[in-house]
Length: 540
Image 1: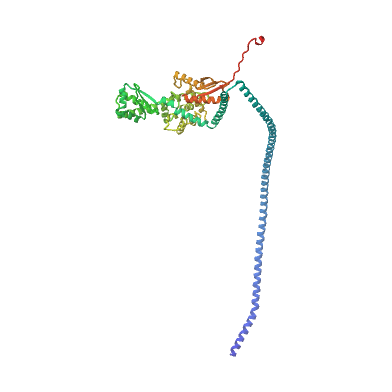
Image 2: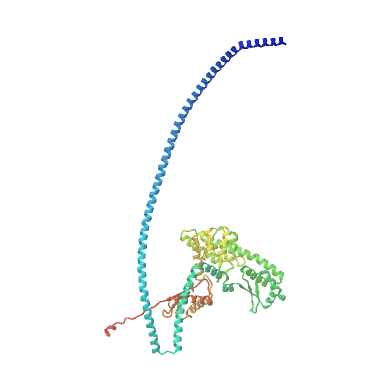
């Protein structure tokens, strides 16, 4: 045990000696390694410092370049902003100067207006003071006149020695004159309001009533007569238990009138085409002699085709005669239907052709398109070809809508719709057609009227005017389109003249049948007459 301990101590001693000899060498190696590392680190640091210095130099150079570029760009921007600022400043300065000039002008105008207002105020104040004085004088004069009037009335009653009944009658007459004056003023006010507020509506209603539903016009044109050889033929037309006449009326849509008038059978119907078909069919049946329901249907069918062909042919002839080209087939058919319509004895198709020629001639004289004017005139009354159960409204409105559906020229549409003033004239051809329409309707011989009937109508107009009190004379002029009434200036005053004109016009409307309109003019004048006698003053 002691031996092992000695061996172990000897081993530790020898290991300590080895470590003592090895430690300096280790320390020296560590110092050398540390020195090498320091040298390498310094070299690396020096290289990195050089690289950093190079990059710093490049950065400083780049910064200088950027600063110079930014400075140049900033100077450029500054110059642009200064230029824009100067321009905007100049524009603003100019606008301010213009605004100052306008304000100065407005101030001058306001000063002038203020001076005018001050002047007007002074004049108004002076006028009010003058009116106050005049009102005071007027009241004094009125009271004075009332006293004088009362005294004169008392004196007149004393001198005249009137009875209560007579005085009452005089008072009633005075009241009547005052009421008549007030009525005239009321009529004038009502007519003024009516003219301002209802002129267009009244024109439309009057035109529709006169042109499409005139009672006398209808009674003259809805009946056609057929000659029959004997009363036996009338019986055959009626048929057993009336079956033939019922079959005929059912097939044609008209009314057959068989009365005691010898040799005549009448056909009545408001639709002219049906009436024409019925007339021709009945004439053909009378000539043929075979009258029974089956034959009636065959003849009516044949005649219907023939009449439609005649209508189309009449339309084509009218278009050729008026020298109008490119008319739609539907418009030609409607024009042909006008051949069977009349207005106060004037054939509507012939009237349309005449209006076309008149419009074309006037357009040529004015340097306008004569062909377009003839087209407007030819189609202006096409609305009359439609019956009231086919379209509602005035014939001008119906015609305008029909032409619009056919894509007619806007000038044609305006002339058709506005030739009676229902629509404002937007083309120069509308007033031309209006004038031509009036010329064609009013020229002598345009509307067939016997001389006796014409004279009778003029006499009726004059008699209607002279039936009123205060009327001295009455004259029907302008072919019966105007009545000039001359009244007594003493019995009829200015207010009563208006009421008298309205009363005369109302009486003419109620008692007389006439086409279009009649103008009533009341003339009131005071004439003072004196004679100069030769030598009167010398003899005196």
